[in-house]
Image (cartoon, rainbow, N blue to C red):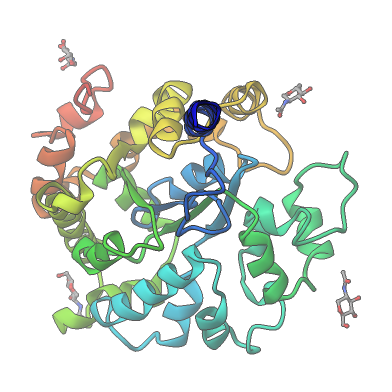
Length: 371
Ligand SMILES: *[C@@H]1O[C@H](CO)[C@@H](O)[C@H](O)[C@H]1NC(C)=O
Ligand SMILES: *[C@@H]1O[C@H](CO)[C@@H](O)[C@H](O)[C@H]1NC(C)=O
Ligand SMILES: *[C@@H]1O[C@H](CO)[C@@H](O)[C@H](O)[C@H]1NC(C)=O
Ligand SMILES: *[C@@H]1O[C@H](CO)[C@@H](O)[C@H](O)[C@H]1NC(C)=O
């Protein structure tokens, strides 16, 4: 009897040691059933929420250049163009469904919104903005030494199928998308209770006066009509659109602060802070997204913020000087209109109003509150 007990004792010791070591090295022991049978960690899903002309393309590029990220630029664009007579409020719901599907690498809803039925990624106007769509496994038209080149990608990767895009998506640990088409965050709340998702919201805001200036040289007729549609006003002006957009930025922040499911899953970033100290903020953003900042990426950030790099959206021109450009380029009357329409947003996000043309023109007077 005794040798047998000894045998069980050693077996017990062995199994305990085995399971502790398995626990420590985070592998599932063979005798414990894992509901997640493929043992893969759930991918991280991050949505950059912003508005037009707020620097979200650049922020998107910061994710796009990370090797672990499958990034899509404005996947809601084709949906809005397909239903351009509708309101942003109505389009929120198909957009939510589209985002949810794409986060889980399901491209089927997207096909319905593309003009040729979604055969090739070239139907997505901005496919070359996605490094993941310009490199293997989605596109094999490049030598490993060539790296990501959006212009060459535009010509060489057009024929990638949407199926291939979906397959490629599944190989990444992070799926990131950016959208300017969410004006009400409460629409997305069900996604935070979805067990298939690990969703985080990065909310990018910018000084409304700088946004208004940028809008003056960039027409967004279709988008503005959709944004203002439900207000029944057909006379679309920049200051009316800005009023609605500013209100939506405040609402998004309020929903995020009130919703328990968003605790630790929501972060705001100001365009001005990112412009003035890119590396510092990129570190914060990556940490929020559970991404590592590699030496190579750090070098890349340095490059794009200090010199113009071919093939990459230049940010150097968009730095601290551009933050102030509206102060000399806009008339005080117009500035006042924007300030009146956006007062709540400006107070909330830390932008100070000017009371006179003198204050507006006095560039030593800082108008962005310290963090
Ligand atoms: C894509 O397909 C079209 C039509 O089959 C073909 O003419 C074109 O050369 C292809 N382009 C590339 C880059 O493979
Ligand atoms: C549109 O609104 C602006 C500003 O309120 C006004 O000056 C203009 O006359 C209006 N245009 C039309 C066609 O109603
Ligand atoms: C940064 O720029 C230098 C010099 O132009 C270049 O040699 C290097 O490859 C660049 N690095 C990255 C990561 O873009
Ligand atoms: C500009 O603003 C600074 C800082 O508030 C102030 O000290 C200075 O007197 C102002 N200059 C003029 C010309 O008003």
